Structure formats: C-alpha cells, structure tokens
Length: 117
Image (cartoon, rainbow, N blue to C red):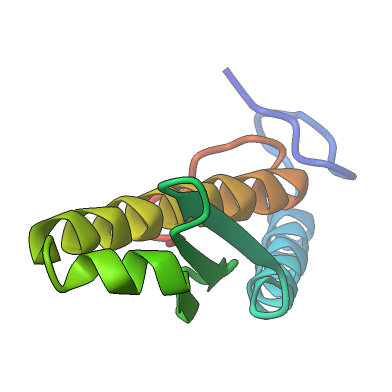
C-alpha cells in the first residue's frame, strides 16, 4: 500500500525527488512547530489552587506558585505539599505532551513519528 503524501502522486514508482522535497518541507515545518511550542503554555492547579504550575509546550517547567494557605499547612504536612506539587507537575506535563502532539499532528497528518518528543 502506498500512502499518499500531501502534494505528491501516489504511484509505486513515485518521483523520489518529490518525496524527498516533501519530507524536507515536513521536517522544516516540524522544527518550526517545536520552536513555537516554547512560547505556548499550559497550567495545572491542584488542591483548590494551593499549588499551581506552568509548563511550556516543550515540557519545560517555567513557574511554580504556592498559596499562602498551603505554606502555613506545609509546616505540619510536608508530604501533602510534596504530593500536591508532584500532582500539579505531572498534570501540566501531560497537558504539554497533548498540546505538542496536537500541534505536530497538524504537520504530520497524524502519522506517529517516533522520537519527536
């Protein structure tokens, strides 16, 4: 089965130069999307706003905020605060992954390309 690439003819012999050009164009678009993901942010808030974090589209943690209330309680329950931070970061990372996959799917047409992220 021959999968038709955007802008190419789906023939068994296919023009290899066109396929290479299409692959290079897709690679350039993917690099552009990865660069754009640096400026896109997702956030997660847990514990009723006790802990909030922001992550960019490249899964870089860029902000952690703790409420005054959770800091008061943290002296008595350090493990709870650690769990809240971990939960918020995991959730934000999952959202960043979903964002990145969605943006990349626009370029790849939904084809899963291993090693993109």
